[in-house]
Length: 405
Image 1: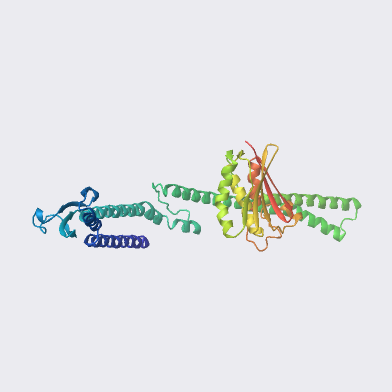
Image 2: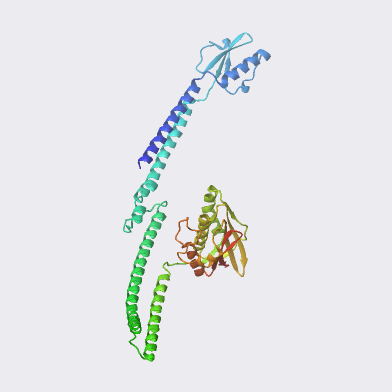
């Protein structure tokens, strides 16, 4: 707030200073002895010298020419200048611009501009600075986990949508936290239940194994039954382990897709606006190949999210020379391929790169969660499309297959 007040004071002081300088310049010009009337008076004298006559209409700033025959040469209520021509003295009367009127007009206009500036500053303060100040602490509180932080409702068209979006973000964080807690609780209960269930067959295995080890079963039939019991209990344990594995690999993220129709050009414009300036700064060549615009059957926001994930990966794991978006059409689908140079991933790793939390051998020095391609696969599947990856000529290519509308 103090910075904004300093800005207002600085702008006002500069405006007043410029006003004073302009007024001084106008006053100096009004007091200046030079003027257009002197030029016209000199031309008049030349005409009298050369022709002995003159036409007053040729001199728009001169209002009259008088000699001693017209009375006292030096007495007049008008502004005048004395010239000499053909051996006689002439009183040449003239008019000049009313500098006082000009001063009043200019200063009035400047006063109106200054008033408008104050109104603009007041509007900015009331509709932008103050609402922003009220929201200043909200992101920090959300980052700390304080989801109960009050978010003031703003009717301002500048911040109304912003506060609505922040409220949605808080609700989303709170919902995700609730889901995570519920999921962790369910998995914990499942693991506790399975660990308890494992104890029974495990005890039977241990008893039969000890009996066999000590030779308690002399009869071959008893030995065979003990071995079969051990095998059956081992199968039970294997089933429990499978359930644990399945539970640990179940989807931990909910994906929501709203299917609709979107022009390819709209999605690519969003991508270009977001990444072209960034990649230009890093001297990475960013190319979007020529394409025929078409309507895609998809969730436009989710498809843009997939492309963003692919480009982020290209930035993170490529060599920074080239990122290219290519296109093809096949079997009623649009193929959108993101290609980057400098691929160091081994081809044998391609089947695993779409798994959750999987990070390739080329990701040692790059930060990440291993979820980007996993999210792409899930979203594309929900939109009725596909995604696949390939390596060609030391370039990494990921292709999104999107159905045409």
